[in-house]
Image 1 (cartoon, rainbow, N blue to C red):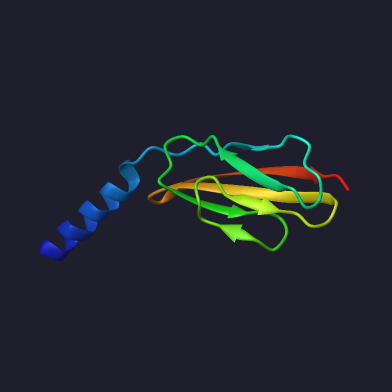
Image 2: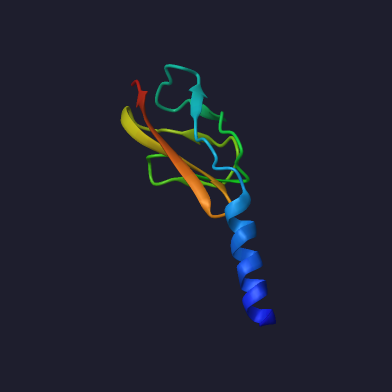
Length: 97
């Protein structure tokens, strides 16, 4: 009986957190190849972050930086997590030559 109560309590605690909202932008707004890009995390109600920066780089930093060495479009994903709840925002960053 105690095991059941502990499991039920853990499940309730996991589901009690707010669902986060994922959002981000970056600077500079029109980056060039070789420039450092800083991602600005605008997410709310999140405790952890998982970034896929689009060029085989990943990060768990709140506000990561990245250098894109080639021009082109790169798909960037941010997953914001709060316990068992998460949301993902995807945007394409265009890097100029």
